[in-house]
Length: 200
Image 1 (cartoon, rainbow, N blue to C red):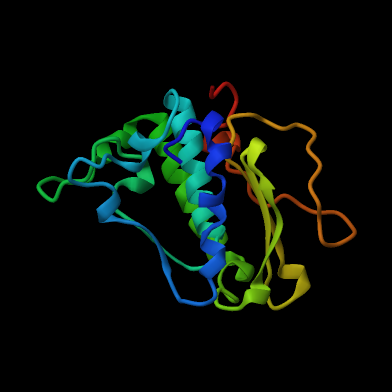
Image 2 (cartoon, rainbow, N blue to C red):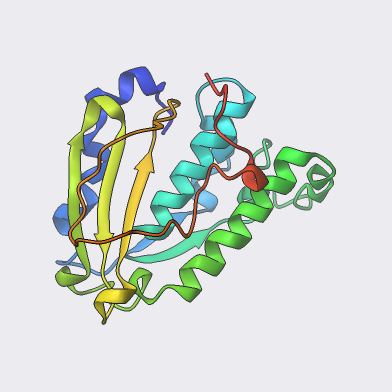
């Protein structure tokens, strides 16, 4: 995620590598203390691009983490996109919520956690290989991943599309496993979260 999207195509495998061993060990997806202290910078601070791009990149990273198999951990302050790295000597910078983009990130994280809790496909088969299926893991040039998370019933299955690119694809063909209509239930680029327009 630290790389400029132009260079991500050459590192696409780093986004998919985790699924090679996801079902041979139990793991937690941690964005923790270790990533955001002692000169390592906060997660928002690590994102490439101008300010708006940083927030869009962070939403994509969090969206991927929350829809990927495995249990989650997000360290304090990262849910509001705190730019300063965390310090045990002071509080989380709650004053950032005076600014719209930080409020939007908090709104996004609340909605993402709600989605996770309400959609059984995101947690009920975390340790079952049948609970995950790649639809497209090879679109490196587009910086895109598409996969299924499966619940106990087909009607609970989710099609996940993660666009790590700064580009907006208005008409993009994506393979789907079932005939019929698919309903969008979550979009990280919704206006309430801060859209992706003009992020480059």
